[in-house]
Image (cartoon, rainbow, N blue to C red; front, top):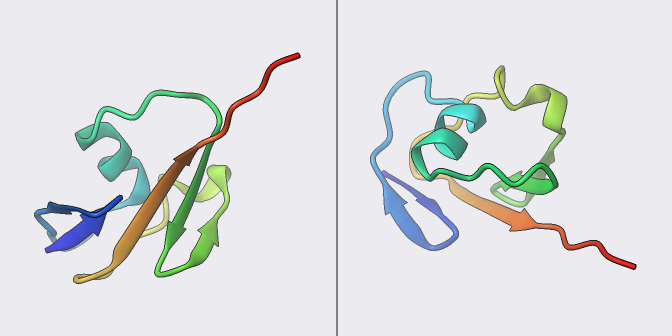
Length: 65
């Protein structure tokens, strides 16, 4: 089990950041993702696996003018 923004999500071997974003239906183009407080660059979402019991945070950046 992992937590994503405080909500539990079932963990499985090989789960990636991209898998989590898809499962949680996060589609906003400007996101900041951390795993156990370590930043994950956007270009690494598909290749970065998430360990069991990790705390994942997904932050939506806001912009405007």
